Length: 103
Image (cartoon, rainbow, N blue to C red; front, side, top):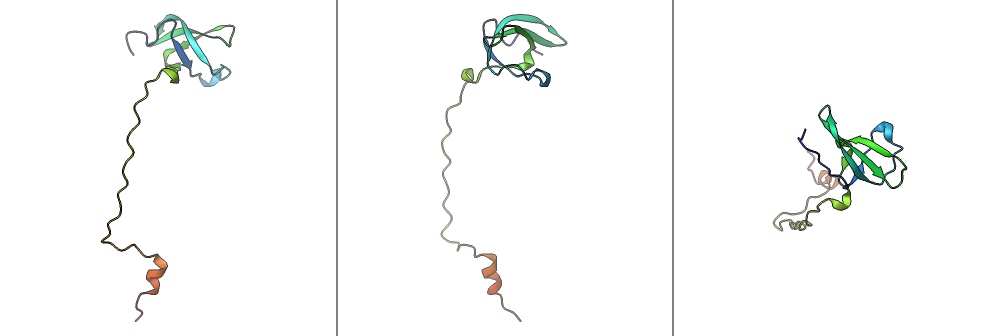
C-alpha cells in the first residue's frame, strides 16, 4: 500500500459499499477524518448529508466522484477505407453453387 492517505479531510468522495453495506445511500460523501492503517489499508471516517451518522470505511471502498475525474479529449473519428474497385463484389454462396459445372 501507499505510505500516505489517498484522500484528504474535507474532500468529496463516492462510497462503493461492500455487499453487506448495500443499504448505504448512493450519494456523495465527505471525508471527516483520516484514520490509521489497519492490515495495510488506510481507513476514513466519512459523512453523507443523507444520513444522521458517520461511517468508517477502507480506502479501497472510496473513489473520486465522476465530476472530479479528468476527461480525456475526444478522439478523432477513424476514416473508413473504401473497398478497392479492382475486385468484384463477392456473390452469395447460393449463386456460386448454381454456376458450378456438373459433370
